[in-house]
Length: 457
Ligand SMILES: Cc1ncc(COP(=O)(O)O)c(C=O)c1O
Image (tube, rainbow, N blue to C red; front, side):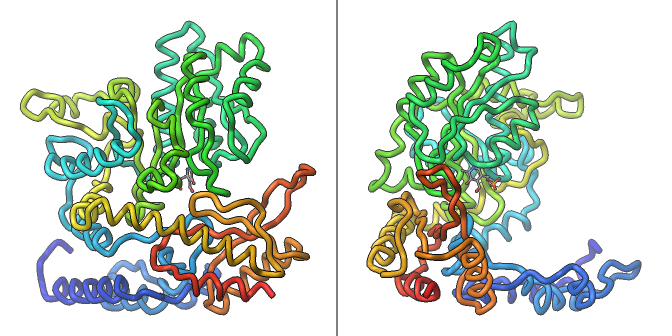
């Protein structure tokens, strides 16, 4: 298995040929999920005592299995939060793997960690956070949010005699599901301000005032969102920052999806106040064109994060010795052994420059505005709310939830597009099923939007 021989050479050529073909294919088939039993029938036994051979396994993946996956970078994949890694970033992901670097400690990964830190400095500069703020790359937004909550809780525990109690986090119902899920991991309660619209400082203050004394002592953090997943809404970050300061609460901004738009001059002002955050999540694997998986957590005070996350063990002592010392990503998030997942972003940023990133993010925003106009001019369609960042919520007059679902399946089956419905709260308080676009891929064209809208007749 570890020998260099002709099998290895043949397999390598197959892999490189596949990689080049895939990254130059601008409209790969949309791919469809196939039931497990059917896949098993198609694939047969792949894990056997003698192995089925590289050629057979590779062809099985290339010709059968990958076709049961949906390419996230298809220009008409506008569902959920899609992605669109640059080709440079994808190729450098191969290089990252080939380089076999342990990314937890400077001693083993210095050159690679240096690159990650250079890319991180650009992310931090976008937030406007003060000198000393820095961050690390994580497996995604969920891990970044968890890392921030762990740091926040540690600071609160060290500060108060109430620290042995269950903590409380306040966020809005528009916050991403990972906030509630990660609060469970740290056994904290989440109290929701009931709004999927912009969380304001007033609504936050009202929520805090409604707490009893015990709850007030248990409250340690507020999570605001910098671009909600469903609708691209940015909370009142300035007002929330002030409220957090007043009540001595950790201020976390989950900008996993929207944080890329910090680079876009047209909307940067909407994020004012983010520079006052204690921590910020930004996912390069969403709108900063990195391959999966790559999230990032940025802290105002790295020492606070370190005291929460740093691991101890006699086998780790050498990493903290004079001779090996440097920046250790393991000290600032939940993972020890880690891939250098910021490297593809670094390479692509270094190759293309930050201006191209700005333009590519602006493109998503302008596609959302273009879609908004097309919807407004369509007799059967209407906007549910104005486009926000790169998200557009709209309705097809007269459609039921079932109609939206069938429309999604039809477009997917016909290889036209992947656009999924979502729900939005009506003024009456009920939830209505609506259609949703989320634009990430700069290669999406106005014509693509027209084609999709025409399927809503
Ligand atoms: C605002 C927000 N936060 C967190 C997440 C979770 O990120 P991940 O899926 O990378 O864990 C998402 C994912 O869409 C998100 O939109």
